Image (cartoon, rainbow, N blue to C red; front, side, top):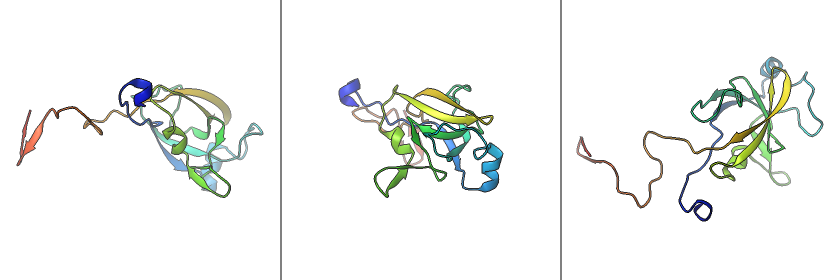
Length: 148
């Protein structure tokens, strides 16, 4: 990150809250078992419950979408991906390998139709800075008083 941007830009996230699709009734609701999927995808994925609107536009990801794959790697119903033989990792590992402003291709199921979208990854914006190096703090706390 420092070699690429000459500064620390932070870790990226997809900006969603998700739920596993292990429940048969939830799978029926999103239609993952009855839709047409490309042969390279597994019949598995995760349901998007909440989307951070400050980072993603509504046409990219919406609440109720089913996330099937990231960069062509299928996501299992429990939110994991195949890593090595007999090993699995959380799908967030694929995102954590990228940097700010990298493009990630997601495959999703919306309205029982498969579509692909490109997402520009961003670091989350927190009210309280997560990591601040080589910068004096804007405030300090003494007892119960905040001074700036």
